Length: 388
Ligand SMILES: Cc1cc2nc3c(=O)[nH]c(=O)nc-3n(C[C@H](O)[C@H](O)[C@H](O)COP(=O)(O)O)c2cc1C
Ligand code: SF4
Picture (spheres, rainbow, N blue to C red):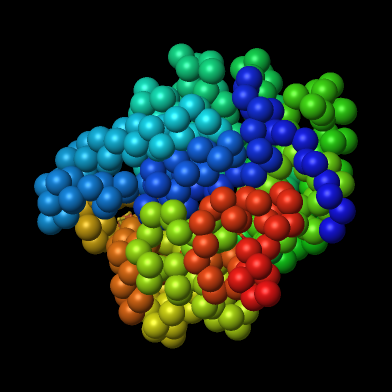
């Protein structure tokens, strides 16, 4: 690979390494991962959802509770603690972002808390964050980054935000063909649609900027999904990307906030172990076919056949719309918060382990984030150094 020096990513007034660690819930990217990525000068992202699971006192107070207000309040306290702890690790370097999913019931509260607690950026996926400029109007220095998958979604956000006199500070373009977790496609049959290809979305977005009179350098484009080697990074910069976002590779890093079993499940998965299916949030999702998922998929059709409205199984009501609680037959019929919670704690039998489709940079090895960033930007592969 030629010795390329990648241009820095400019977000607000910060110049950053052009690497973004994607937000990963539940608890997979908390203060340790985000703080250590930011400390190296890149963008570290905390996932805001259900962070109380990382705090023994808050877990004790709420794990048996069905009091939604108490659970929400514990989660906001946990979010505040995580942001402050990440900023302490980062020591002013890089950027600490918070990922909030639009599909989550407490979306607005998480956005507001993130701003109040000192997040440098808010990144919103799993739905269109039409109202993000209004929600953050009192915090003009907080960068706003929507996650979108195609030109149509980008056009909707740009037109709506421009009416509020606001532009995104960057856009994350996530390709559902490769990414982990919830995917930005309408259904399972459209996940591999060619219109999601990075080349098409980057080109289409450039044209859209021209049509809307937006100078292209005003909104850096960050691509996400399946990126795992420096050659890809180089090619994507050649296509006009300003940075790359990775999820799975950071989830398995030494600094990742999940249990070591979680990292091993992701790192050891072979291509045939990875599957797409419908989440209870009503979006397609990609994960490792572990025991629980195999069992669930075996009875999915039966569960969908008898779907009907019921109380939230844990009283948390985490989603605006939940296939299980609201009896939406075409959506998943399981409690995602419970299954992701098991995965975070390393329960291999019962957990749901989100993972992207592509190989990992260091195979099944768990390595520090510094090595991952060095490999992506400079092509330095520590695994080869170990072998020689
Ligand atoms: C375990 C896991 C959990 C994730 N959770 C979220 C999430 O809560 N919100 C979100 O916007 N993206 C989530 N993602 C997606 C990542 O932020 C990232 O965009 C994606 O994984 C990129 O694809 P890659 O894994 O192939 O690098 C998750 C990914 C993983 C691996
Ligand atoms: S049942 Fe649905 S709304 Fe309730 S916690 Fe589980 S995923 Fe969230």
